[in-house]
Amino acid sequence: MAGALWVNANDTPGNGIDDDGDGYIDNINGWDCADNDNNTNPPATASATSFGHGTHCAGIAGATTNNAIGVASIGNGIKIMPIKCTSNSSADPSIITHGWTGVQCAIASGADIISLSWGSTVYSSTYQNLVNYAESQGVVMVAAAGNAGNTSPFYPAGYDICIGVAATTSSDTKASYSNYGSWVDVSAPGSSIYGVVPSVSNNTYANKSGTSMATPLTAGLLGLMLSNDASLTPSQLRSCLFSSAVNINTQNASYSGMLGAGRINAASAVGCVASLNNATSTSCNAPGNIAASNVTSNSATLSWAGISGANSYGIRYRAQGLTMWSSEQTTTSTSLAITGLAASTTYELQARSICESSSSSYSSISTFITPASTCSVPTNVVAANLTNSTATISWAAISGASSYTVRFRVSGGAWSSDISTAATSVTLSGLTSSTTYEVQAKTVCSASSSSAYTSSATF
Image (cartoon, helix red, strand yellow):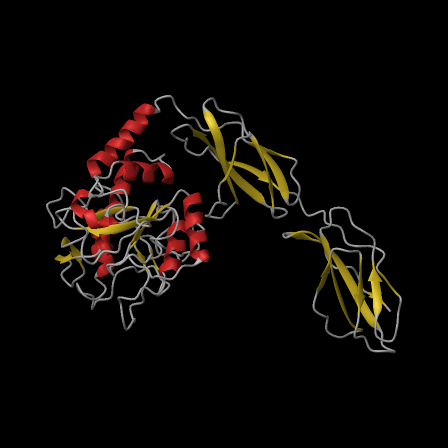
């Protein structure tokens, strides 16, 4: 496994600085999300049965091949980014306590494939959104279908566009423990899989069974496919994985249609990638002449030159210095208006072409700068219609305002909670008679742009 570890070339080891701005300090070989440090090794007491699960899965996906040591992975040359999601001090290492935090970390660190050999029967729209976000960043998620031997959806495997993997035996029959159902996407061998486990000697191996084993086998194959063509999109990877799978309905008559596209077939999947390349020998080129116009403090219009053969375009952007891109936006036009930007910020943007059966890589990065906010302070703030307990506060309308915020206080006291309104007046109530009050207002132009408060008006 040592030679298969991912190395973060954008971080300087041991300097205590997050050089690459991904939110993790010195994550040279991954990150321990549970203990919040860069040591992803299992504790010294780890064994095949304690903290051995993740090591075994990693070896299935990416153990070094052709070195005459231990096992050879299906990934053949891919790199493993270890993300540890259970604390060294956990009373039960079989419980994954920081799994979704780990997913976020893997996306931010630039993973291409995320293999998840864990889950539960609980659905969450928040986590479905995270799966969707991974897809928008070009990341494929693969997850275990579960080992309860029933049809209950198991998440994250059951989420849309996450590849749910059932387990088979060496005879292509469904493993007795494997979950199954219409929500499963594909099957892979998962019974008595020989692999790496942690030990003091660092040279120990064991057999393990489960959809946990079938999942990294599938993830490793996806990595192998991607190594043959790094420009493949998640959709293209899934398409080749599913279309190349071996139909095993005959061996599983009782589970026909409930083991996904079939059992994975590495040779055919890689062949599908090659045929896809041959079919698209006419290049799907990345867009050029990418520019931003009509730039305001919170919006811009992006444009690019059209590409022959492109059906649509994918656009992403980010504030300079951030690791994560925005979710990709697609359009059939050669321009796109974006909003919600921050004022006085340098943005990076990229575009790619989406052709009939392939897509280009992203273009080189272009930049633009949003100007300082021009969200003006309200004027003519006055109080009228005064009674012993109420007052109407009004001000002049400001061009570009989406709303206004008002606050008040007894003169010299603490400010009230903010009052938001789309109108140019607001009535205050619950006031105390014979009392001097101060009131201030500010303009809100967008979620990221607002003016300062006015100086105090009194009544």
